[in-house]
Image (cartoon, rainbow, N blue to C red):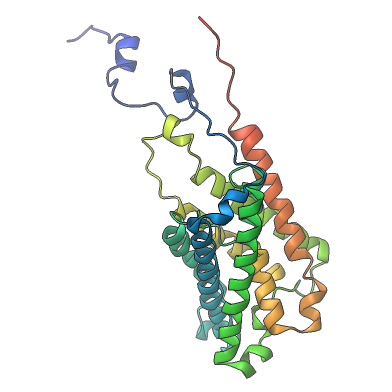
Amino acid sequence: MEGKEEDVNVGANKFPERQPIGTSAQTESKDYQEPPPAPFFEPGELKSWSFYRAGIAEFIATFLFLYITVLTVMGVKRAPNMCASVGIQGIAWAFGGMIFALVYCTAGISGGHINPAVTFGLFLARKLSLTRALFYIIMQCLGAICGAGVVKGFQTGPYQANGGGANVVAHGYTKGSGLGAEIIGTFVLVYTVFSATDAKRSARDSHVPILAPLPIGFAVFLVHLATIPIAGTGINPARSLGAAIIYNKDHAWDDHWIFWVGPFIGAALAALYHQIVIRAIPFKSKS
């Protein structure tokens, strides 16, 4: 065998059953058929049981999300010191872990949004109609209010004394800092949602194993680690609204606009970036 050189082309195609990854896959003759955009307004959905079932799933998921996460926040706040509780890392895990579990449970029913910002981003990308988007956002907000309300019902005194899990800009940070943290944090989340659920992957990188709820939950965890000290981390207007309504103190409402404007801007930027840049279909030369 000495003195023989393996032909480069033979070596490159030695295992033809293996699919190339990333941009190399785009050179193959795999045409991706883009699904049609959702209609802007679909009144027929209002007569479908699956439409209301999806809304109920969003309500229950957001209810459970607020219940577990706000209880975790209350446990940390009540502890005499961080070492006696799960600390900031535990709070971040509670938020990220619950999103992972709840997206896994509800993805096949409603898409597992559990967040008005995610719903808004997917609406801008024409993944769902305005009818469904508005219904989801209403059900998410109602679920969040009920979830925070149950926590307060368990421990009214400590709940009010420890901030009720409401989002406020921390002392030493400006409103601009809080707004920026919400924009970038939500961008990370919604960009991850788009990437993890992109059907185009099945035509390009189908051999890459992916469980969509895992990267989504992990993105929530990482964003919370980074921004809890700034504004408690919203990146979910329903979560911020539910805690603010149940806590209902003036300072909780002073900065509340940040936790709607920031996530919606971040979601819009993520939708534009993913649709225009990441999913851009390259021109194909005709041979």
